[in-house]
Length: 556
Image 1: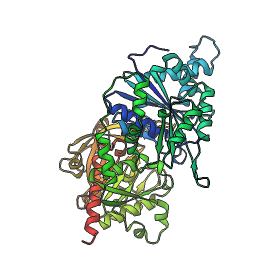
Image 2: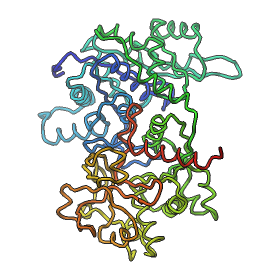
Image 3: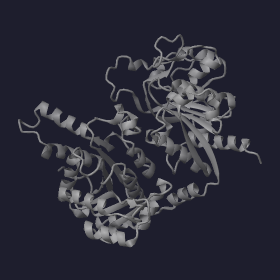
């Protein structure tokens, strides 16, 4: 194994019993605690699937695709990592089995192994180790989350790598945190530890003895249950950590600290660090729990049945509520239901704000356009993201400018008014994976615009994930009728794009309706950069406008 650049400590987080057990939140909360102790923390997600990245996966199968500044399409857990630590993740922080096998096979084709037999051990495990060490870089602590559940065939090479690293680096430099489930059997009226026992048995069969066992449960965990898990799983009672369900995931750093989790890890790895300063996390939890007002936000999308598809979006809206000390109630509306409804306005009537998120494909687009029309005509605060901006532009063209049939060439290649069209650089692309406009790009905001007021600056950098853009050739009638293009990407595209009617050149990034109380659309995805300790300015502004709208409608 290559020598470390500094004495980095490693915490390996695994999961057992069931999937979606909360490994990502557990790992992120541990990172938040270490960060609160003044330690430099980085994180890494090891995903067992054979896809190179999740960029081409259906949201119903994988949930949200989280995009980093450097343009990587990654697992949604990287969003948790950024929200809990404030650190910026990148391509190096998400590794898949697909990436590992593709790289090793490429090496084999080049002849790098000098005719040797390529095997899982040592070639695959060595490559996994190399990626882990590269991600650790100069951090004090590197937290490595292993995706999947112990016992899965796909995750075995990753778990074998963990075993090897613990052997090579020593117990004082590594820790194993295993997240399990302790179910409550209602008919018996008690918590059952057997699933946790079997999960730890599976870990020990691989050669990994967990140091900490985090026990997810619906009910409080009595001391006798902790003692039983301690006895049968071979860990001290103080290393059995209760993780009872909470109202907000942002409570978990405080809960884990109260359970002594961070101190157990600090002691085992012989780390000298200050006491954890959790004042910010306590403030956030207090604002969430003691919010006295509420806003109802309608999210019109096509993945309404799977909330994980909009994970960062949901969290960013919650952050906007934290900024104003109010609860944010999310009402997911299936876009196709809005299309079929005879009275679409009735489905949106109780909304204090309407949001159209990003998405791909034609299904549900006309329902989203109806939602946008309702927001524009009724003065309801509106926020469109990526496809939401594109559809807002199409709605304005159709219903304000009389451009019947206006559309995106993504949905109608023969439209008379291609208000939205392919990015020019996308026309020759045939492969789907990692070929969109991805990652952070600069944007210049118009002085005095709503966007500039929200950000407090005219120069911003935001993350993108799209193939289509607003077609500048058709903007004149829209701008003449009051549509404001308040944000442009004026980088390399400013030399090749069609000029706007006012002479500016660039890719449309932000649109507004100045005569509307709050109407904004952005081509980028601001939800990726929102944090509970630093709510994104557009989300904070949107929730503030929704709160004002609600109060104006509420009788005194």
